[in-house]
Image (cartoon, rainbow, N blue to C red; front, side):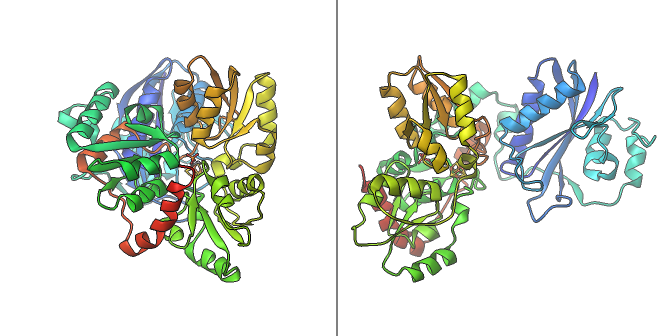
Length: 477
Ligand code: 13P
Ligand code: SF4
């Protein structure tokens, strides 16, 4: 059967996201992408301020039923770390079935033909490239419908000329194997070290020089003699590397790779809390902006939070930002009281006690290992609460053969590689960090080629943040 699907992306590397969605669709059982329109830029309709969308329509020939095709579309959204929490929030990918030959349904979850497609120029314009004579529910063809639709700002997308797109390297699309080879060749040629966090996509972990947790990667950035540091992680991690290695460019392949938790603490709020507790020592998780680090006495990661809290003289109050879960866990372990900032990580916050119970029941005898960013009631019932590097150590040393893991899903790949013969299961498959999934082989290659985008920290902020970051690197070393 022939079907038309609409793809849209407005978070991260939008072109790569559409490219990846087409690839996954093409690899779905019984499905072949037989045509694709050009790309169109359009402002989001109906939601709060957010970046423009890049839209496209693809034609598929498929043996899947409409419902099975819907499941395939949802799988693509899941693989590309689409977050469904916010109705109008930015998203890495949106996949809609617009039209399916001979099928019509008004079901809430499977409304086909898409009920609003004739109101949307950003659907009709690309669809007209593929099927101008297709008859729509109104009885109009796509071309006719275009003359009736309201004028919306939709423009044909011109790929930016300066930025290398790896897909076009040498005039031909590069497959994944070639990309990996080219990335390693370029890294060598440019004297670059590629650092990747444990939550990154498997293919990114595979091409990196070093894969690790925040603390290991910060230490590596400080000690490395590479001319160029390419950080496959999120923005605060690249900033921390820039604070520790100011003499070398630190490249983050997707500058939009942020961290929801880091965004939960701001300079003004922290200044005001400090004013209420003028003698308090400020301990900040490394998941903070450089500006917040500049107001901090000592930073920590989840690997050394307990030691850092313990290192504060007993007669001093402690303000802990931004993670209330890590803060309360570290305080309990260190036997201290702390003033908690109310931040959290949405990816870990959604791991619930019921999920742990369900996973334990499904894998009898498995050890439960969770990250301290999980809610306290989850940490309470776990066999071990560990940073990502601590998880590897624990699972290597333990005799158990099976583990249920409560952290971002990328960790399961790392654990399986490090502990062959052992089995790892996610407590919930929903724990995906959308930001950690934004870096792809394509944008990593482009970043190496361009030696950018570079993350910088202004010298004044850096000078103020340096001591707190250095102390973090020293504690537990
Ligand atoms: P680790 O310090 O354990 O690597 O964790 C970083 C992070 O962002 C967890 O969400
Ligand atoms: Fe931030 Fe959570 Fe993603 Fe870690 S997993 S980078 S804390 S949003």
